[in-house]
Length: 128
Image (tube, rainbow, N blue to C red):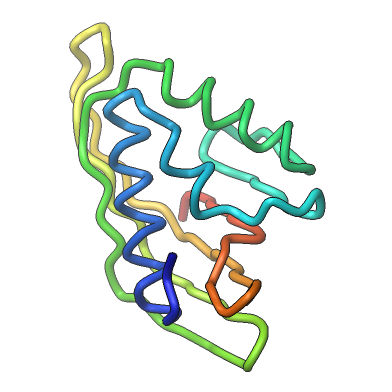
């Protein structure tokens, strides 16, 4: 489990790449187990609560988008218990139908320190 905010961000985006490959399981490990988590991701669905967020990740993983996700221009704000990451998520790849995609979106991720480890609390993306 990540003990620094930068490690948490790296784990978050490694999990995002696994999700693009069809495996959402790594998100379960890095997101908080608490029921106050939320995700407002690229599909536009606002999900609140652990179960809804994990179900959304399962849907996103099943979309069949083969590609890569990179977090550029990272900026961190950190207090002893909360951390904030803003960045540009750069996604490229191909849909199941063979359509090439390249997408850059703004992203904000909020982390909370739980038992000495950073866990994701909220993630929001939007196009610019």
